[in-house]
Length: 92
Image (tube, rainbow, N blue to C red; front, side):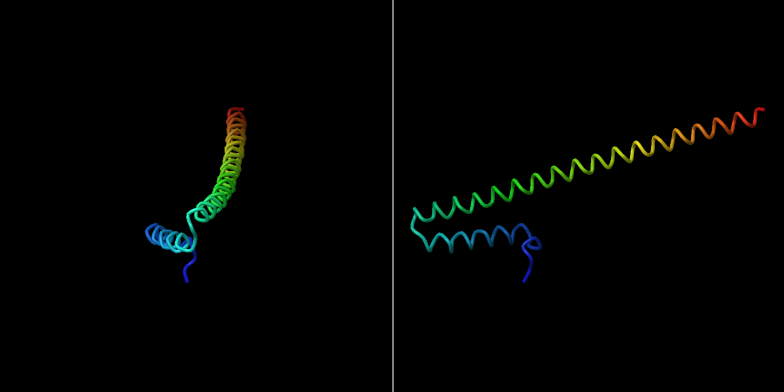
């Protein structure tokens, strides 16, 4: 059996529709509302967790990129100094 993330968008939509119909057919309208709200609450929690993980990952990637830029700038500055020193030595 496929993992959930391996299904195509169409397959997932179809699966959600079928499960929704099956679950709804087992309950009366009041129970349907309770189950739907409960599942919605679970989904919201998952969305919050996923959003925060994405946010933290983006901040970490930005920090890593900033550190890389600082390291590259430091290397450029060191090379400029070496080139200057090399040029100064040749003039003498």
